[in-house]
Length: 256
Image (cartoon, rainbow, N blue to C red; front, side):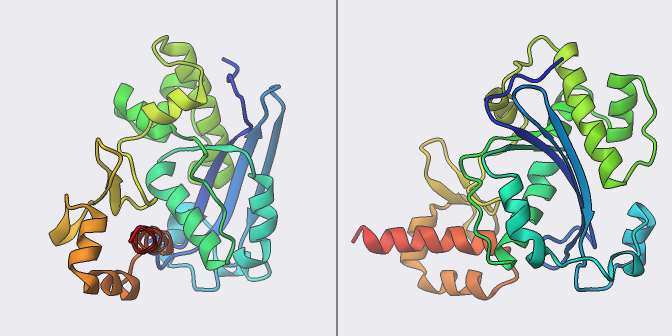
């Protein structure tokens, strides 16, 4: 089924040095940009992470230190890549929980403050898990009737994710061919920050989603325990999480 799009939709996948969005780095990006008229643009490029690639990560995606030693750093390509996805909605496989938080973190480290708050995010894995409870390779076999060759390479996984979403729309009539609907359907939570350290409650208020203050309003905690903000800023938290805490704190100051 051809996707019903208002904005270009970028299917993307990241290969990284690991799964810690604070400490690990991107080493490969692959995307398929689908335009409302059905035109497709695909690109894959590698990134020098500025740190050794652990053997256990290489065992998954096959990328070694020597494969990326002459590649540009993310900081060097950040502005160019940001322009390529400007005005686009984003889709991926487990992207809401990993790829998007990791990408946002890399942009912030590169001092490129890209605004994704108005974008729609479709997580094909979430749709799959709600419908069938399987893995990407199984999803590709189940929906597309083909074996996923070169699994765990960014290019193969990206194209497979694109094909799976099209097949899901063909299979499930209850899935609307609409990016806003698919974004909402494939979201498990209403995160304030991409890592999910804060979420919105049913009143649209920011609530802390971890630790001793879980369930408490962010503004209330920042007001009654000023040291909490310093702990967040000095802690091992994603830059995006710190940025959102700061915005809420400044909003509190401005409302006085």
